[in-house]
Image 1: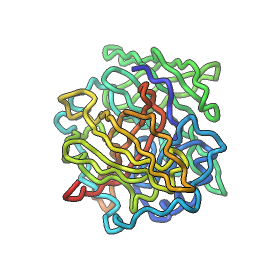
Image 2: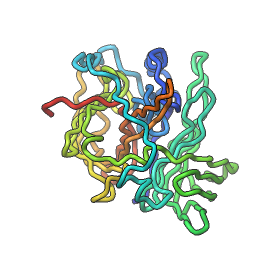
Image 3: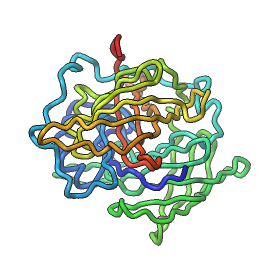
Image 4: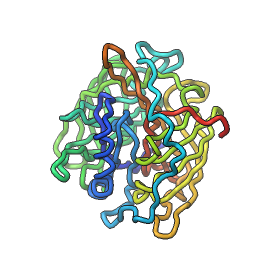
Length: 360
């Protein structure tokens, strides 16, 4: 599948997975203005696909004329107020059986860019077993006297890699540079990698100057074997206020909705669908899904803009941190939504995880 469109995204979390209430509050306060300015993701704390916690990316079709949710976009239901924000597990110290790090080819998986000042994520990319890549890098911007990451570049396409020479190069690819997020250009680049460890090099988008690519670090999430015990959860931040909420059943089916606070990006949507592994019969942390979106906008709210979306890809992003000599991991569910032509258009990151209710 050739990937022709990329989401724009902005991270709002420290890369070490630490989460403080003031950070979450600040991200919500600036949500309306920051997303419109950068056409990006607002993330909360708790890890995320190169970005961290809950948030959603605007479609590339969105314009600066998009308005924040109106006052009539009511607050989320309080039904989840008693649920904990997250349920961190023990740190992954070795590849779990069946994980990408255990059975992969050394270059597939999620890779993390060097962090920005202040601990913000510098970006992330995912390479599947067919050597198709999709990713974004970020840079810092100043908004209301505070610094936040915004999209610097997005890239997608196919790569060729040689395990014998520890080298890689883009084959068929396109890229976009901020602020020209709706104007994909030819992408070229090459470099070297160390299997399951680091990847670096240089790349060029169109006629732009060559940019340093990395060094990218192999994500700990590649050591996670994803089965129903990992995926069957209620995903979303406290009260589902930042991104929304997603409930996944043991058979991989799911239901969810976008929060009113973030609906100006993709509208007031509810959706249902089902996850499965991209490589059937494996436990790799590389998922695909089919789904149907429904418009649930009330008068004065933004209508759902996902009605033509039918499928997407996903992975469980893992962030690990040590406090008081105890290492814990936090997990978020990163979903990239695609239209009927399978083109990636937007993304939502449901961060934190909570046990699913007894009846789904």
